[in-house]
Length: 249
Image (cartoon, rainbow, N blue to C red; front, side, top):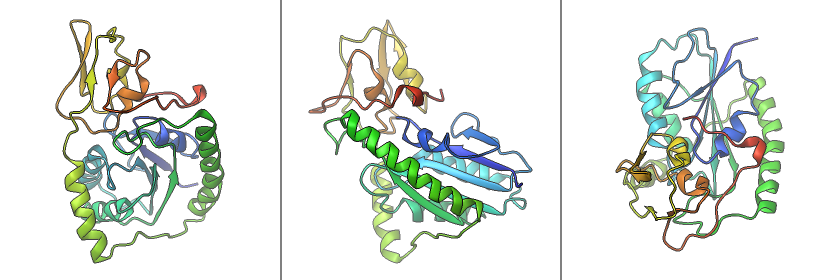
């Protein structure tokens, strides 16, 4: 059997939910453990959609790690996207990023997951809705796993409109959102710092401090046990089922 490696980026847990259900020989964490074994033949990239495009760490992973290695042994690359509303132009961005790194995206698909993006989703999903969406995603994954095992091809749309509009969305996605704030409820437990996928949160004088490189994943907001991290007009937190909780950092 060909060796399969899954490269996953996850903050609130949606992409982790999918990645853990894939049958892979190795799973690596984008932004932490980004080494791809030389004998990898099938590479999967599992990532959330941020503002209609790829999270910056995923783009950097492709442009640095993948672009700098010998990929002659890779025969099949697939991408799986998790999103709250729609994947928009992310599939084409993934295909283009891999193309720039000298690789070809063979297959791409996606899963609608509980929406954790605060600017659009001001209220967290209810547990019943969350569990239904996760169950639907698990069922869809069975079909997708069969596609991948048979090395089916499912290509991303790369039309001119996708490139132009997608470029605007990508530029918007790179702007940090400074609307998150930390209140006096903070007890300095550091869960938010552990959840941040890029290490953008520190603890100073017993209180969380959010630096200026926020990816707008909002993992810190959703994980805070004291509701000490706030976002204007946002209510409730998105909580993964207990058996799926887990952060990479």
